[in-house]
Image 1 (cartoon, helix red, strand yellow):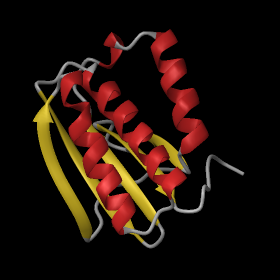
Image 2 (cartoon, one colour; image 1 turned 90 degrees about the horizontal axis):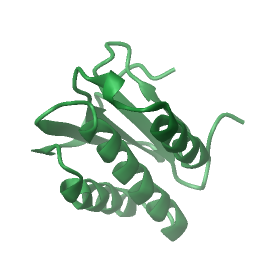
Image 3 (cartoon, helix red, strand yellow; image 1 turned 45 degrees about the vertical axis):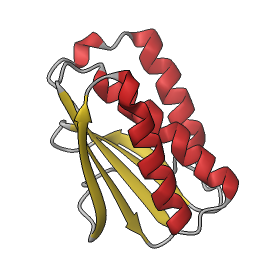
Length: 130
């Protein structure tokens, strides 16, 4: 279960909640993954997860998305702030996002406070519950 996204080695960004800014999330996440010696395929997974997390967060009715990218051991966690309008996400869109995140993340979910989407990825292609 996801508990929090507070780790010492973190980078925090706040960007407008518009899909046009997804590149910021992708590039920040990929840069950190590369710095943590993730392989090429893992960096690509991190990029996809960052984009999906960002676009998901944009759809929750907020003006900006606060993102935190944290390195810990062989892992990278990404936290995306969520707005108050979680009902704006339709079930079909959620199913697609969840299927993709389940395929590429070691773990993902809404934090205990219900105000952030947390994605956890591991170097070496460790995905989903095994």
